[in-house]
Length: 248
Length: 213
Image (cartoon, rainbow over all chains, first blue to last red; front, side, top):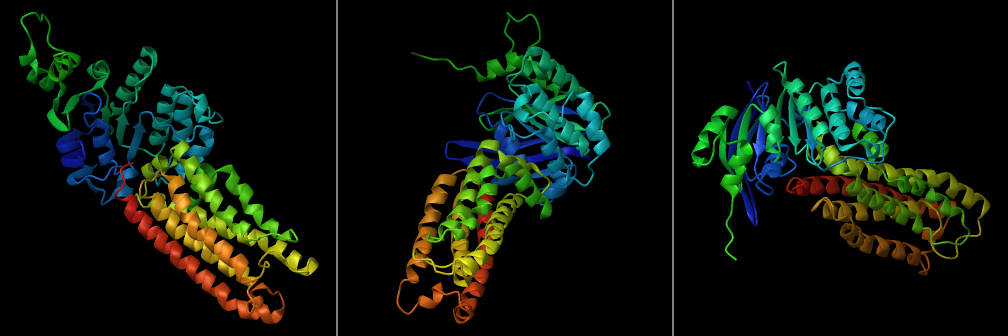
């Protein structure tokens, strides 16, 4: 069973169209969703979450149709939306106490364990946490209800290299047992070199390519120039695909 | 349903909403436009919606394992709780007033059954305008509040003015005969409140389903 299947996802805005986006995320994998700012990464994630209402397309989460089975699917989802901090003046304990009431498989022992593991103090307010710790808190919440699919929208943006590296190690650990999967949107391609097993590249609302990472890299090697001595990285591929020339 | 209300009260409600629950005590003021009590029942909701924008409350709720319309249900449950609790808390004060300050309210309506009946209608009108207007965008609380306050304030003014019209003095009474005449108004208020609450929920949920958060 796939963790996530997206088919022909379409959303029209007056000046932008997310056009027939399709990809599949296998269980136990980390998929990187790349593209420059405004390419449609966040719209794709929000459409998958029903925060944005798509005009067309099929979404299947852990084998269940979404949003037809919205509540059941969300029981197994963990979400981190970059730049969106909930309840900055609330203590973690208040948010946890509220969230746990909504999940059938809430595991209080696991919740305490992950709080300890990540060094989270329930008495602290959200505003007192660093950006990296806020991401860890949301992951701890998701792990407490045994989430199997994690959707991350730019979770490492704005973090220092050490915090980013810590989070990437955590992401790898999350999928290590093969039951959890991560769809991870970012434009920090070096993060994906370290942890993603497959890549989906969105450009101006279209999927340019979606494949296992080595295949993906291979499929863009035609962009190499005689000056290149090493294979192209994800960053090289993005820059060469998106590069614009200005005539001023 | 209980969990949604718990979430609203624990995380989403603006602190002023709790203060405004006690504004029913204003009926103890000997001469005062008691319709102001209802204004606070609406102001607390508006403040909470503004606060929710700051705390990203709608995103948090929408990501919980509930259908998207649960976002609307949570807000309407909070509104019902705040408005009905404010009226319930005002009841002992209204009783004290009619017992110990029986000289009447020279400014406007007395805190009697008609007052509560018309007040419920005012809350109902506010809810059916405010929530569907707000959930057109899920963030423009100010516009929704201004639009909803127009009929609500007109309702409050009408309530306060009606009792000064000759022939409608029974609306202002607290004697047994006047209170008996006011019972249908109270029942109508309850019915209007319930109908507008459900209509506001259905209309708002439909609108939110089209909103891109």
